[in-house]
Length: 465
Image (tube, rainbow, N blue to C red):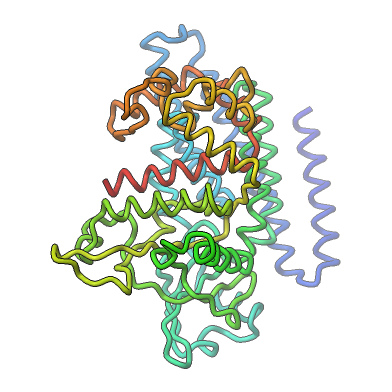
């Protein structure tokens, strides 16, 4: 049966691929896509089957909860996390975005996966060759980069899952950063999401308690927006405009690089070059005369304003997407310190909160701070958690077990970020794995992204504090 199905799939893919190549305006690109997608699907299938077999075989006959079972489970988690990591790197693009997201799901994914993904997904992103970069420029702007700019560094400053950034200088002498999308990413994204969806559904069928279909839904919704750099540019300008109109008291403390619209397209984004420190580089921040604790406060305040006042939230604020520099208008104080200015990068993933969601979310946080059980339940239900999982939702949101959530002490929600915190969190996640999966599958996409945003901000604040 499996052999027949594989043969039928091969014939179907082959026929569809041949038809697509013949009718395409760009046969060469279409041929590459038609050969890449089946290969990725084959990799996905082999990896998923290997992981499923490894779990079944490694835990077979062991008593759940026993020392032997826990040891075997830890080892199989490590092996499968490595397999998933390598699959993401070999396929690239959307898969790396998936791996990065998994690395932020500390409240539901086993720690072995979290550690593996966090240690690699921001550091080993693919790099497009200079020939590929030139091809993108010719297709988008009609000329190679060395003609469009007075200077263009062929070696990228940094590379992420969807694009890489090059330093350049315009003909009027201005230094800029040019974000170039990885080759063929737009064309393969839809197919990549479909193959990921297929594998996740297979794993859910094989392991009913493993339900990450909500994660695929989220990527399917956000990926097209993140692949349109003009959409990203408009978001950056809207973000700054919101601070000017709605939060004027701190508008000068928030900045986004200026966009050069005449040198930007959906796959190329030319921006002002930012000479600033990375948000978690404490030594560099201190050398600028800025107190890291002031940066931490500014980050928290900025995202509170976006969430509860603007209703337009940057939902990918990990460390690589934020920088800091001295506030241009500030002077050294008597202690030799300066005020910080937060620079927000990568504006591809924003979420809008309607008035009702914003109000209920604010009311829930107020209830959590004051340990008001009735208000926690009421507002959790309004946000989609349901009457059966409101306590779990409060725990996921605060990364604290229910007993700490309702503790009336002033510091009941404080996270120290130490090994004790992580162990408690992992024990909580393991104990309620299936319930957490159910909770995340029923929450609205906007709330899922707010959970991700909270986790990113926590990580940055821990590094600064």
